[in-house]
Length: 227
Image 1: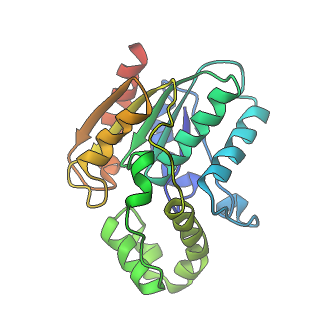
Image 2: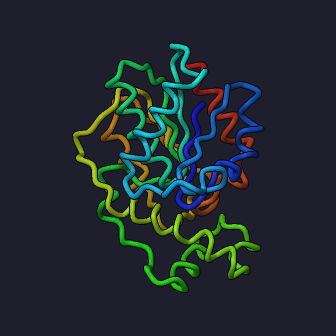
């Protein structure tokens, strides 16, 4: 199970997910450039470049054993995981399932309004969405440290575009929150354009509904593994 974080997040944000899923999957948490142990590297501003870098890391890793892989991405990370799957399939790597959480379908991404560009507006936007540690938002020094990565990720997401005809052979499991303020039901069902095998499940909650449904999502992924 390859996990792709959302915009601005480091791999450690998904520690609980990793713990939940590690009982049934070998879990890899991707760390994008520019954060935590890769803080010395400049962040990338293209989702395709992030995906290509992640694929290169995977190919060179001990986890590249020729087995079918599954991915999980949240929000921006879902789009990265989709691009990763496209690269993997083109390279002959079997992708069994792509799981996307709280994510607009690739061909609809370019139609989404951008996040605020000024620091205070972006900070208010992150607070509104939830998911960002309150201690980080309240600490000006931490905000200053993290904002270059957040802004680079938003730039990557907001400049991403994908044709409706782009498809993968892998199954796509779409999971969303019924109160997500930025991802609509149409956005979730739009993923049906990108694979012949798409299932959509909705839990209660907003853009970060996954925080309250870690066990439920783990159970759903285990069930889908059987099919």
